[in-house]
Length: 339
Image (cartoon, rainbow, N blue to C red; front, side):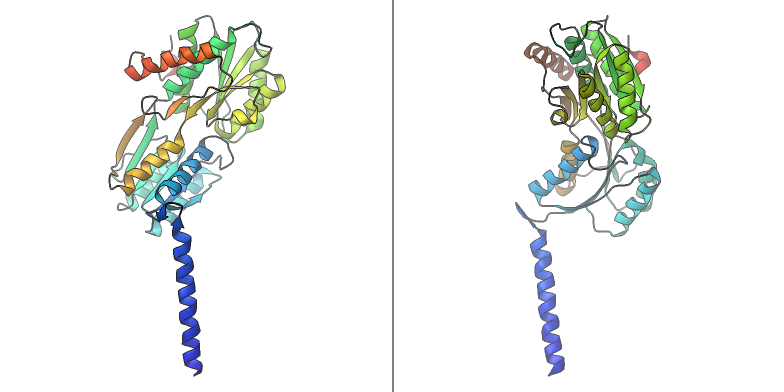
């Protein structure tokens, strides 16, 4: 009798556990369709920019497709391969996504080891047959916000704008994708007004708001009244300085207008959320293919936000955007190529 009772209790427990598992897998739109893992860049969640946008993409995929996902927040580059290997070792994920250019080496090594695993990387190319790489024409969004800055810095009657025609851009690190943003920013400003002076510098880190603020104040002292922080979490320091000194800041990747409603002129939008959703969509629909996906304004993954932009500036930016989509503007992606 004791054995029978024990077996009965055991069966009931198994039913409860299995039932709980099934309930946990049911999402807003039905049964789970897949499992995905994502490794964020070292700036971590809460950057209100690149990583947070990627997380929105995961949540969109959960809502749209009913996926389940796990994630990791490394604090150092050396941790990337550990997390990638841990996820790949489980053999349970339909896709493992790396966020950020500096995961390339770790992903290359992991993809070579786990050849049957599908991987994706955002912001860098990894040339492996089981890796889908998603990169952007960064210079296009740089051009748009550079043009916006040149148009606004020339306006009068705005207490946040001075008569000096000086604007600035601060990058997180000196790497090709950031330099492409800066080159586009310079070219966009020059397209509007060759007399506008563009300052640029680098934080050297994605998560150092204090240094971002310090560099912004230095630019303000040189006459800048609009500064774009293309620097991940470090860009929060740009916004803080702009608010403190009452100039304009331009946000990056996500709409950061809520952080300083009176001082965020616009945002250089990179819709990482849409990119993550696209990668997951390809896998779930059996369309995954290793290789390079180059995305830009035409694919609606780069752009700008309206925020505090005057109507006449928005109209001009829409004209420029149409020219970019039609291929009528040749925008440099290297600083030395800006005329």
